[in-house]
Every structure is written in C-alpha cells, then in structure tokens.
Amino acid sequence: MAGFRDRPSMRDAALSGLEIWLAGTPTELDAATRALTAAGRLAWQGPRRPMTGTDAGRARLYLRLTVTPARRGVRPASPVSDGGGTVLPFPDRLSGGMA
Image (tube, rainbow, N blue to C red; front, top):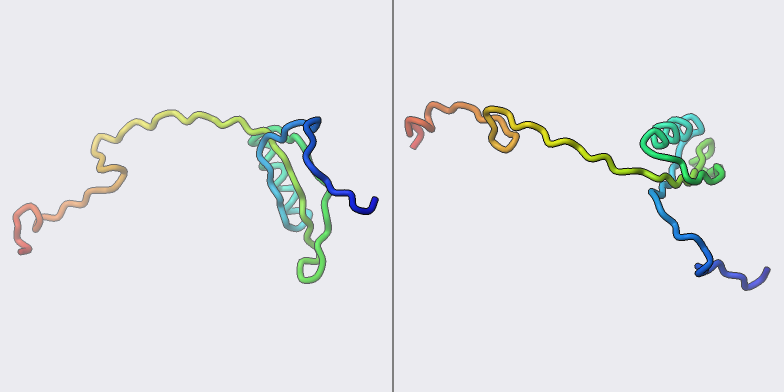
C-alpha cells in the first residue's frame, strides 16, 4: 500500500519487558537465547534475518523477555574492611619514617 506508515495506535497493547537485538552465528544466537530465557520468560521472538556482505553467515534476531529483577541479599561485612579494599601495612607510615 503506497503511502502507508506504521504509527502507534491507542488499540495496540503497551510494550513491556526487555527488548534485545542479537547478531551472531546461528549457534551463538541459540546459546544466547537459551541463556537469556533462563533469566526470564520469552515474550516474543522475531524471525532470524540473515546478514549479508562481510557479515554473511550471521543473522539478526529480536527478542523480548519478561524479566523479574531478583533482590540480592546484603553481604555481611568482613571483620577488617576498608570499603572493600585491602589495607596493606606500611611500617614507615606508622613511624613517620618517610618524611
């Protein structure tokens, strides 16, 4: 249809979730899809679109996932802590030997 342009409609369902475009070999796309769906629920998977030119043998793939953020527990503080850094003993600093 000439002049047709896709525009948002009030009747369209609202998009939600994590949207990802992947590019890689078929094996890489399979592995990435498995890893990503382990983190959430696959809401939509588009068709693989072969790439051309120097990217021949690779494809693009669009995924939409519903991911529920996991809450991480609070890590207990270590007995000797300096904001996560390691404090090294410098005898000269304690005695003021390096002036």
